[in-house]
Structure formats: structure tokens, C-alpha cells
Image (cartoon, rainbow, N blue to C red; front, side, top):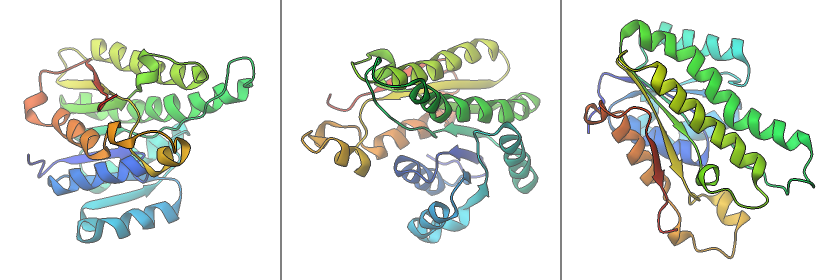
Length: 236
């Protein structure tokens, strides 16, 4: 599948899953733009990419800040002239039982999972609408659809991402712009292996499988898909 000639912005691109997604889109021929907060993480990504690093452009920005998100998109457009795809991968997890966790945990989960997605979409969608085309993909979580004890703040923050996606999909009907949400269960990352040492990671979703689904949703074959909430659960 070729994305040659297109530009893909990937938030969370320096994370463990994000790095795999960045590589896969660069391999498909896309020019990839990665907003990042920590220079060291950006340097690690560049080192991991090897020869593909020339296809990946970094922009230092805190996407939890609205003005910074707007500047990052404006800078990407100035450098590359267009954005064809927006992948909202930035996020994080923290657990805690409802009566034991403070309100600060809820603020943290909304700040990590909803706010960067919301602000990235607000910054990029006007460009998509002006061009009459564009693909946005957000990332929910199985916990949002099947919440478990001890993860209510995380589940609600990811459910908000799903609701935002579905609402926007209806607003965007007929514009040539689509938005969909990928909903993974546990992804096989080093962090999750450390957090759950007794679990069987062979049953988890591989980052490469997430990347393949994202790539399909940005392909010409997915033009008719809008407002979909797509589970990717591995063997769980």
C-alpha cells in the first residue's frame, strides 16, 4: 500500500506504539510529521528509524496547549504544504479505584487522553475542510466499551474520545473528511509487560497490527468508512 506524496501527522509518535506506526507510514512512502515534547525521545525515534529518518519531520510542541497545537500544525503546513492524515495516538494509563483515587487522577486521564486529541483535531480539521479531504483516526480503548473495576478514570477518558469521534463523524458527513476510532485491548509493549508480568503477551495486540489498521484507514480503500469504532482485541 503506497502513501507516496501524502503527509501524515502522528501525535504520540515517539511512544512505544507510535514509533512502530511512524515507521510503517514512512515505509509506505508518506512524509511523516511528529510533534514531540521531549528532545531525547525525538532523538531516540530518529535513531530507531535509520535511513527512514529523512522522511520524518519533528516539531517540538506540547499538544495539551491549544496555542502550541495550532503553531505545530501551521508549521507543518508551512514546511510541507498539506496534511492528508492525522493520527491521534497520544495518551496514557493510570488506574485507581473510584473512592481511593483523587480528582487529580481524573484530571490526569482527561489531560492525557482527551485534550491532545481534541486540540489536534481543532488545529487540523480547518485545513481538511478547506481542501475537502482528509483522514483523522483517534484511539480509544476496550476499557471504554467494557470498563473494569479500578480503571474508571481511564475508561471515561477513552469513552470521551470515542464519543468525540462519532459526533465529529456526523458533523463531517458530505465534506470529504472522515474520522474513525481504533479501539485496542492490551497492546504488547515493554511498559505493559512490566505492569502485568504474569499475563500472556502472546494474546495481546501487536503494535504492528495497530499500525496496519491505521494504514488501511488512511488508504483509498477506506474512503467510505466514517464514524466507525473498530475493535482490535488480539486473542483476548
